[in-house]
Image: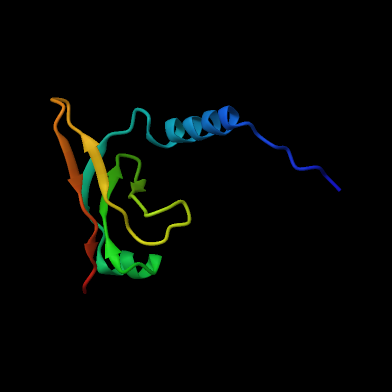
Length: 93
């Protein structure tokens, strides 16, 4: 049997950084919207969240956790230092 390779936290963070760069770096956001009721249903979610569509057709959206248990709010800080929240909203068709 093969032995599981155990990564250090630093190795895990670097792998996640590499994946984030692969998916997002140098991409342009071409559309911003909330997920549609059909998209929520496909995810089996009760809430909708912000979706960002990138110039290569990739759609990115926040989830409550890494397992994808419903939509999540998108928190951020604008360039001028102002905090903002784009909330999750109950999804209705």
